[in-house]
Image 1 (tube, rainbow, N blue to C red):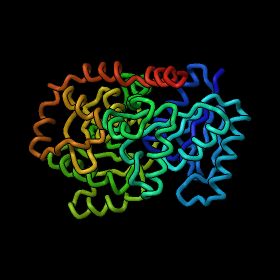
Image 2 (cartoon, rainbow, N blue to C red; image 1 turned 60 degrees about the vertical axis):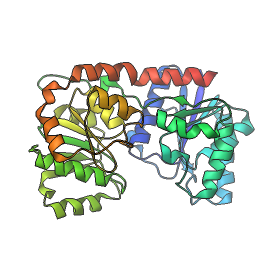
Image 3 (cartoon, helix red, strand yellow; image 1 turned 180 degrees about the vertical axis):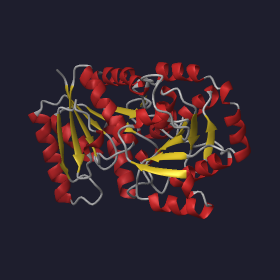
Length: 354
């Protein structure tokens, strides 16, 4: 049985953690033993029971000292030997360099996943950017990009061909309707981490949803910018239109109950897998209700909304008024064909073995 070590700077609650959760479950079901090593910022809420072991005492953040860095490399090397690790798979950010060094010293193949443009730099300063693009990327055995956009950004730094494009996937069975008698909530569900980058787009959606006459918004998620979002809504006089639900592991049930789903990234796929109308929220505003054309275009940038124009309130209202024309069954079949989580991780593992 092959053993894989996943290393990530932090494991909290968000899209990256959901991505890793899917990796652990899918690769375990494919016959692998999957171990997880993380930095000190750790939350077990999204940790699946399939994980073989968890080590969350590494100092992998930007505050790590040189001694911390050396200890992390040594600790990762011990895990590789202890669990007979055959492959190391690193996720951003500052976890990638100690992971690469540990893998090289132990003679184990090293893979790296880039989750967005931020994974390539402009995050921890010029020194980090230089090390990442000049040392890590050229020496990784396998570089995975979650979208065409990220693959093109990474291509100048790769020595071993193009990055493998492996989009975020979704476990469609987890979001399938359980019964026709499921509880119903006509409000739209927004699922998002509340950070300073995302609250602008979320606030824009809530304003447009209010103007469009939707019955309300249920917001699932938390983060450092929650107060900023509340202040924006208070200035617009629409605070009562939104219920802040907080973090939840019950998103599939909430999606089934909702009148529609709004968000970015894998939330788009989860909403479509739930057979619900889905609105793409970008960092700077609302991009529109997902149809086949928008699904294809938005997937190029991992459903982030980058490079897409915002729509105005009139256009949003018009789209909502014609939801019957959106072929949700066809959209679901597209998700099932192109973004099925087990199939994507099977492709990853086949490339990893090469």
